[in-house]
Length: 411
Image (cartoon, rainbow, N blue to C red; front, side, top):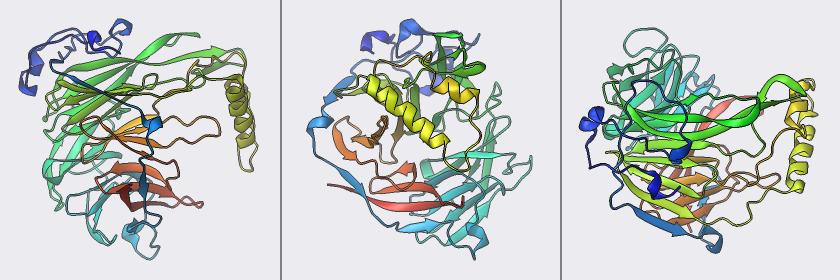
């Protein structure tokens, strides 16, 4: 993914972007797939881009999270405001309060630093501030809450005091939530859409379209087209589509004033500012990514063992397909499982977990310098990283969901 893959334009602010029609800023430009008609491509200014390379394997710098949470929301059975059906988003406000989105009640709830309930917004409905099916949450400048809703995809905006601000309806309509993306402090949103290119023999990759919308929901253009997964079929299950074992995918995140684009096959993340100018390429070295026969055998053995656990559904042809010798296997393990922009601008890269090896996170400073390793032993799914905290979503053995706030330390 060299900088030569980018078509350079003069610097432009987002207000000028609708007029831009230029070649795509693809991570692998030559592999661009089909695009929707009449969607302009956004030109990327890569003048002055910095490239920062680090060697995490040679560093013993670590980050750690506290063993016990400083706040836990959702575990007080006697408080109805802490009952969650399914948590669809969680984030922290600048005053330390915590926001959580519950699906079944269609409510957005705010709690103080101790986990005590402060206020609730939203309900089921079609009107202003109401939700069909709430999904995802972003905090932008001034602690404005952008809460996703579908179908079709839209945003309800609230103040931290609980007042409804307005509704943003993307146009043209997006029927489904984005697979990845986010909302920037300036109100521009990035929504991803996959262009399917299924071929039975795993020969054609899908394309992830990264679409930019202005603060009022108008389509600005296509920021990037990134080759994504390939899919195909094996004879064990001719009606079942699957992708190669250990395949890499496109990764996108946006928040604050930062956009990050990456692909699991590369030890590299491209960093754009909120004017959609490429400002930084973060690279790192990772030895020993080759997939061996022992890795494939271990994955298949572990898959079979998981499926034999009590309570699992009956084994079927789809399971045969997943472990079939006809299923292609990647030559290299992905370097990236996901990318997340911290609230402080740090770049967090979840490393791909290999068979019987959980690999944790890598953290980079906003200027691209390597910061630390965060070990894999995290008691939950990461919802948000801050300068000194991690917000986790957890689920008990009984299926009770909760949000935990933990301290984050750099050692």
